[in-house]
Image (cartoon, rainbow, N blue to C red; front, side):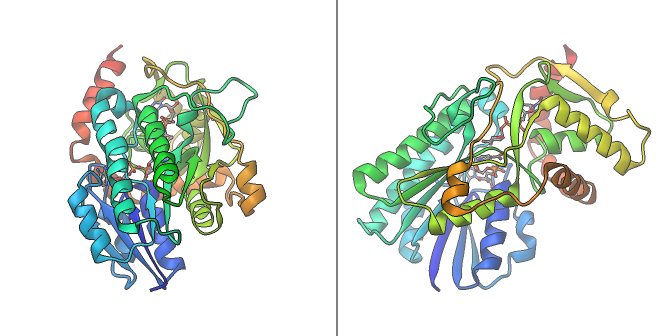
Length: 353
Ligand code: NAD
Ligand code: TDX
């Protein structure tokens, strides 16, 4: 094998797309997928590639230092692409400590294992996958650059910001070759239906309320998940070590405009009367500390590595809707665990107001 790459969080949304992309594109790499299979991790996401000769799944927690040491002893890992995390902002508001454990302690435990195994090698790479939320909220007309100061506002973004700092600190202190990327909101198949788009698709199918936080005027910058994975592949192979790359598709939407577009498309797909889905929109209590606007300036990634997004948002949205409509059983299965309890806690009070 030419390379052995450890992907953490490969059974989650972005991780499963990345694992599939790398397993298929690099038959001479060994792709190791380490995932604790929390509520957000589903091996079903990887059914189509699970028997590939160059793929191995390992169930384990990134906070388990002994397990990580054994994994590095057993496999000649020369690259880590770290995605494992608690990823949902609303959950971080309900349970911040879990986010510190996984996102901060887990990242540091993984860095330690890499440091001990790699012992100053320079032909290795620790790639940390992060988010634009570390930069905080933007005023109109501004854009996130790699040089923008960190200003995290939620427990989730504070934990991701901390993990970013630890990656740079381990690079600077112990000489671990590293690279980081900070990406905007991803969308596409296999996203856990607690996040805006898949939650609203599944609620429209079930004719349940669509809980829009606040006035719905918050702005997010949306990127097709595979375009994120192609960027990660490029940065992993060609990015300059020690650097950060912002990833985004110049695709800003207010939540309410996006939800209305979704509603129109869903009515058409489901053959329902125009306006049916929109009548489900329910304005609810805002998310505490809700960042108003995110927008990435991806010029560095475009100029240095020639990356451009492949899909127009309207096209990607239709593909996403089609996937969720075809995979209702997947939605029901992943929502059947502890999800119901979470949903009641999260939305019971909001919708009652
Ligand atoms: P996700 O919640 O869908 O998946 C996270 C995965 O990590 C799951 O498979 C889960 O089982 C695993 N995991 C959680 N805790 C673990 C632990 N202690 N040990 C091992 N595995 C563990 O998340 P996602 O949306 O795919 O995000 C992946 C990464 O990308 C995260 O680091 C996130 O911060 C970052 N990111 C996400 C987005 C987005 O829009 N979703 C945007 C930018 C960056
Ligand atoms: O029910 C909802 N109603 C609503 O109005 C939900 C779930 C969300 N929203 C709003 C909040 C946000 O402004 O929609 C927007 C998108 O919300 P999420 O899908 O929860 O994503 P966000 O909070 O923007 O964070 C996402 O993008 C950055 C991912 O979950 C993070 O992991 C990633 O780092």
